[in-house]
Image (cartoon, rainbow, N blue to C red):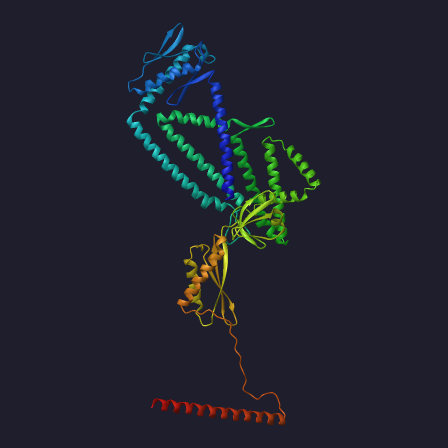
Length: 550
């Protein structure tokens, strides 16, 4: 989400720059049209004319272009000739006055007659070509070229995607901290995606310009828009000090900056995986060294890039001094949050859209501000967490440098079940769930033998950490249903008591034994008398019932 918002704002800024450049270029073109103007046929520039006496360059070009447009519409061969009127060569097209060549129209070292002959030849060739392009045979040939160019562009578009998926991504070193998922470093991946997007965009623009240039009716507008767009991209739009920069310069600068980030990330990953792993220092020290080197490379590369670009970096020292004065006046807390936000944003350990766990809070990162981070929990409650807490405490990020997460589901089965059946059943249940990824494939681990159960673990990978509790619940429901269908028992706690029938270990005195025997005899006699009483009572009741029946 954060990448989409950032890309949208970049597109808006670039669009505003392009619109401003278009307006500026249009005004400059209008200013330039005061002195010279273009003679063209179907958008093809032939030559430029200047002012001549009381006739402006714009009026001379408008009259000539009107005559040429009428000439190319008729299939009859065009007749271009040069006559001399008042010692000035005049170009006639089908006996109509097209243009008078003056001294202002000629180049240095060339006479008016020579210039008129050159222009007449260009007009003749351009009109003939325009008439040829208006024939039906050329129209169908242009349609064929347009279709072939579109198909070629689609094929090239798909080929670029294939190169991105199967070649460029293999050149990027795998992330060391996630060998199972093989996640790519996001800096390099973003740079390659941006490059792919720019190449595809340029390809689409080139194909659109080529197709519109095939047809004479659209060629003039196509070339006019292309010229305005090119001048807009190359015209200065930003002035910093004595240097001016165009849109192309800005795009190149941004691309080089991403290149610096990608190069620093690649060198750091190579250093981490090839050099630091061979040392005996702890992993934390290795990571600290790698991060320090990465930041140093980025800082040095950025400074060199700014100097090569001609920017004055003395303003950075001024900002640093202002920041130090602010800290001295008691803004340590604010500065701490600002620096923490800068570190989080620059390090990209936490991004918008990541599913994180901070203490007792678990949710999706919705916004990264300068001083705080907004997290929407599973209860749809937004929790505002200071940025410094994200650096001071442990944060579990389920999406960091990887798009998948693993869930572990403990499963206990009673003794007597076939472990191969249990394994196949668990894998079948995992494969039927739509939220469980097919790659990496689910796994079943046999952990150990318990006191009264077999201990298994079902390992599945998901792409939506926010739904992990729902996915676990669905899997457990399905596991219980499947186990009941296949008569696989789930154990419950059991305790067994075993009594030995041997001699009682205690020794009683004769008096106590005599008393216990008398007590037992008395109890037996009492029970017998009670039993006789109950029997006689039942007999009397039975006889009474018989007499009533009679």
